[in-house]
Amino acid sequence: DPKIIQKPKYLVAVTGSEKILICEQYLGHNAMYWYRQSAKKPLEFMFSYSYQKLMDNQTASSRFQPQSSKKNHLDLQITALKPDDSATYFCASSQENTEVFFGKGTRLTVV
Amino acid sequence: AQSVTQPDARVTVSEGASLQLRCKYSYSGTPYLFWYVQYQRQGLQLLLKYYSGDPVVQGVNGFEAEFSKSDSSFHLRKASVHWSDSAVYFCAASIPSGSWQLIFGSGTQLTVMP
Image (cartoon, rainbow over all chains, first blue to last red; front, side):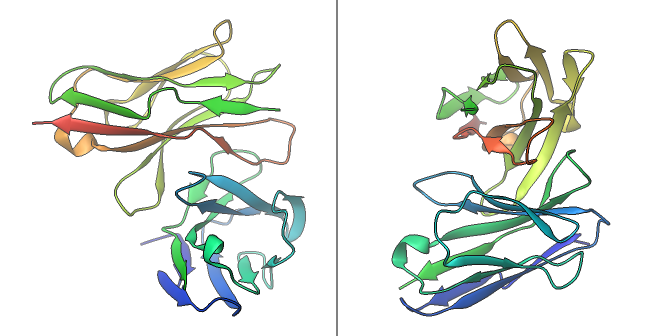
């Protein structure tokens, strides 16, 4: 059973639209993350949250907004989508600063 | 700034041969170090980790890695590869007192020839 669930698996969006990527983890971890993988940058850290509070934000654009409604949820809202946002977005979690576990990713294509 | 370098973008070996994938990090202290594997169109799976202590760490599926502080390296090794080991391998580091972000290398595409 996957312990980190990402929805949807695939997503096609129109330029300028808004989408929300869903992530839930059932590992009991206190920290959650978003990473992005594209052809330009293999694996790029975006955000880290601990106990539902933002720890670090390495995303330059405010179009990317994490949302944590529950301690095991960390969704990613992306507004005003651009073709350059096309990538696979990975949600991850860890217990404190230990090994990080990754979900299977959401592959986003912006047309 | 901290960084992780994997100098070999692609490595091809024959099945049954030994393997070493190279990884070097840039950090003044000792980071936490990890190797992940990504099979085609899948998520990342943790192979092994190093926090401290014995510089040689064992992982899953016969993989091991050796930490060298003097060389700032964390190379991955396997004595005998199988065709199913074909995948992309990522070395990653995190700073113990930092924001817990993982800094990834660019990855090494491993192809095992039958």
